[in-house]
Length: 275
Image (tube, rainbow, N blue to C red; front, side, top):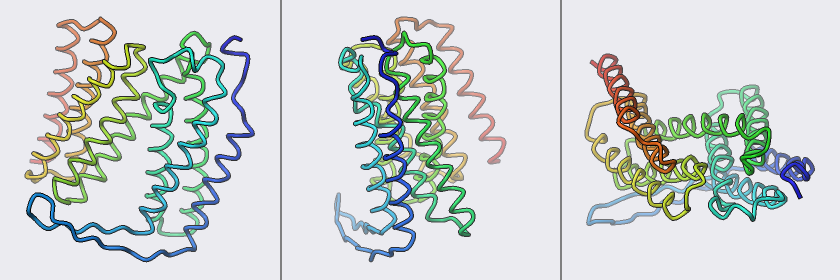
């Protein structure tokens, strides 16, 4: 069976979007109590608040990942690509749904919330469709789908870096969250190289550790949330693209210089805007 023989199951996608919308609407009217946990990691106190918003985010991420899994398993060539396990296709739809569900809780009016809800449904649907089209590199829509997913990956990384960094919580929490986001997005981007999955995991982990360590250091600086997020994104972009070129066997001195120049320009922009 060819990659084109079984198109995207729009019925399943419709059910996924409907469930996503229903969950967000229900949580708009339901207010769950906040639970506070007092922990003592590394010998210092840490207060963790579990709110209804975080429960909604967790639920939406779980629903979208489950729905995406069911849709992706219908692709005829998925099992022939062990270098990109099915759960990698969950990453971008799940992160997008979670971020959108979180941001919707801060909508100032019902009108803004309704528009945001529709936008979330459309974007999640398009993302799942793009993931389905990106399974087979030989398919006609692969190039456009992969380009759109790459752009979405960097936008999600930037948005999440900014949100986490501006929280100003302890580095143990913020650096860990940034590390997780960086690992997931890097895993999605690097797995598209078709390299052995073990090598992809290794490079994604190394990139995430570097970003997490940088977050720990940045928490002691006076950078704004946007500047900090942009700096983390620039570093993440350089690391991922250098790793990407290496996995493809195309890494050269000119490529490294190009990415270093991009990093210097971004750093200069941040310094100019900050000082």
